[in-house]
Image (cartoon, rainbow, N blue to C red; front, side, top):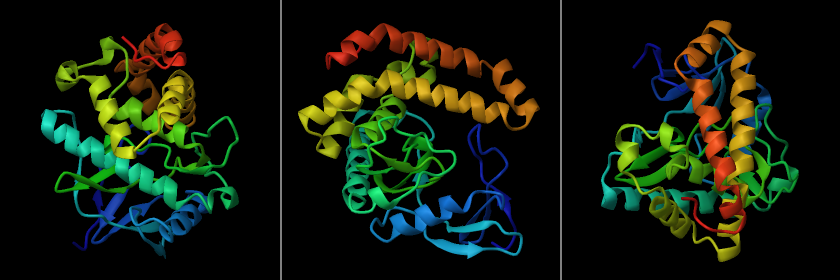
Length: 263
């Protein structure tokens, strides 16, 4: 493949990433801190794309990782269990591998910072379905590290739980989501991580704050970019979905604080 082809991205990276052969090219104006974080994490953790410097236009060149990225939640219960156990295991491997370097690392500019300021491990910051590469239904690597930063295990686990379970307002459970058991899926992910009882409780308690900070970040990031993209996102219900999720998490806060599954 000698021609560039756009990589479908989410609402924040739309049209910014391209594939060229065995490389993924990221924008030239992206902060060098992202490149340095990937390099340092790559020395201790295999599930991260390798870097190949910059091209003539200054774009960051990353390894293209072959595999499948989950596009939905229609895999069936047994396959879902297999995948979620492996996602938890890969996240645990990332965290265990980065204990010794977390205190030395600086957050990337767009990090979803753990507000505690604790530098326990390197958090991916967005270890959801769109950023997890599978091979034979086993999580192999995490991609798109622009939100990574030092933080707590529980903080990254809370992010993973929100996206993979998924935990959101029933109003936002569409299509295949309606037939999922979010709490069972969360248990599988936590089992794959081999999370202790205390870590499970901490992750649950952090869910409302995690959702709040993520929502504020998404709104701020979209507003700072192309106004047309932001307006399109609002028109398609993006802001309303975040508000619905915020209300749902507010209703569940007491249960989560007590370590009980939301209802």
